[in-house]
Amino acid sequence: MNNSPAAGSPRLSHRQRIQWLRLIRTDNVGPATFRDLINRFGSAETALEMLPELMISGGARRLSRIPSADDAEAELEAASAYGARFVAIGEPDYPPFLRRMDHAPPLLAVKGNPAVFQLPPIGIVGARNASLAGIKMARNLAVELGRDGYSIVSGLARGIDRAAHEGSLPTGTVAVLAGGLDHPYPPENIGLYEEIFGGAGAVVSEMPFGWEPRARDFPRRNRIVAGMVLGLVVVEAAKRSGSLISARLAGEMGRLVFAVPGSPLDPRAAGTNGLLKDGAILVTEARDITEQIAPLIGQPLPPPVQFEEPPDFSATPPPKDDDRQRLIEALGPVPCGIDELIRHTGLHPAQVFMILLELDLAGRLERHAGGCVSLISPDS
Image (cartoon, one colour):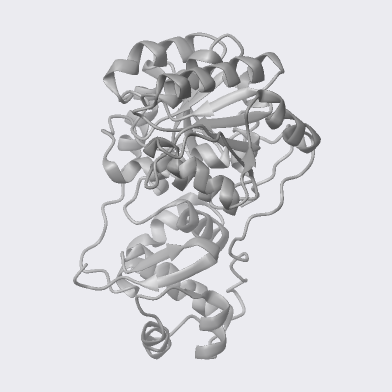
């Protein structure tokens, strides 16, 4: 699957979009597994046909439900009725910097003005229980960056996120949701949410329509925020906060990380001050950001750490039960690299990729940063 299409790339047909949606909505199929399935079988339609066999080979206790074409059609219709659409990673309206992220969502629900994705994007995130000074700082940064031609990306949360969206409403802002587009959170930001997609901005989500956000969905949202931008600014953040997760992810993806310093006596500044100690770029005004970001505009991002493309399996015998057992015995709860597994087991790379794909679809594999994998305990 090509993650860097030209602007004139062809769009999916309706049938292809249905099959893509069915595949990504299947349990245990995330962006990484989706990519591997497409690369291995050539199309979502063929991959869907192979899923039951792959799940059984991976030792699944029960087969995951595969959404029907009617299920996918219903979700597409729900999106259309809501004024939204699903954009595929190879299509021109897909956010360009997100496309370069390791394991980007293959389909993204979008509502609003797609022109905002063509502006150089900067993320602004921070504490939900922000101070008045933090809120003022976030709003002022968003206003000035917007005037300079940048879009502002954030997560629609209370506090800093809200201030960043409000400051950039006239110039272009993008809200990333943890739930479905029809379930914005928190409820008090619904009015702001509607202003975003009704004006110069857009709202996006990788989650299904009708999906109520859960606690574990917010790190996924944070990952998309980090992946969509050239740089991420943290205005206020405690030592343990989702904003620090976003900052770490942004750094791993090769994005610039900025932080606004705060009082050592304010717990809401402990995380941002820690980022500065770790090398984040200090911000006291918008120029501190634009001086670092401007030279990057039009330049390719550093490539993220990612899996190599699964090798061609056509000339290699499929894995046998003994091969599967050998690889499973080599795996454990501690993440290890795929290259290490290949060297240790002596199996052909294509066989290793196939076994890992089977385990993933069976719900027995966990993927980690840097292309590492581990085995999920049966008792988990």
